[in-house]
Length: 264
Ligand SMILES: [Ca+2]
Ligand SMILES: [Ca+2]
Image 1 (tube, rainbow, N blue to C red):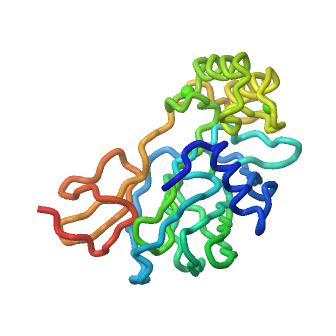
Image 2: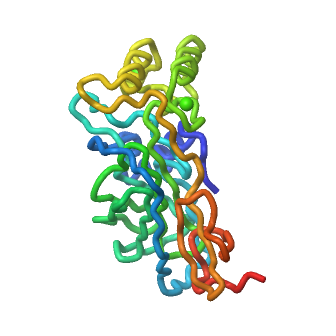
């Protein structure tokens, strides 16, 4: 089960992890250097880890939550880079995670790598060697079946439709007028904890490329999730294409079992 509502996830995460990390840690989001938008999707062979014997493990909470879209990258805030580079995890039972078990698949030419994993029992933190770059999508999996997370960076795409344009400004303005506090991570573009007119200004900077940074107006982003595909010889691979290659069939991610069962 995943908490798809960000605020719920943060609040529950703060509560659940309060004895270990505290709410401040749960809300922390390190950053991202500005990167160029990946052009084409990448496709990577999936190498499944050996059977762990932890079939019953469930990821019951993460920060960011599964399928989280970061719409605020590409601008530092008070000297702090933005972007997803740290992932906090809470499992339903004690597990042991290692860097070697982690797999990261990305639409970027070079996927971010997990450089550190620390924690104990049910609570773990994964650190990537870089934040997601603008426009990137990744899938993170942990060497256990049916446990993976997907994140994306889509600067300025506030309404999450895959394009950054004036419609996002209108969506944000509506949130400001409505004093929207339910999805602050989408609407608090300048990260000051409030949703107000200053966020509209910051969004305009994202769209128009102030300070010599990329202008994201009319940028189009793929919104499809990363998918896993099974080939005729049982080979499983992960792709960021919009569909599996010919002769292969989409299956659930991460690839498990691998080799995957032959699909009739
Ligand atoms: Ca949009
Ligand atoms: Ca704000």
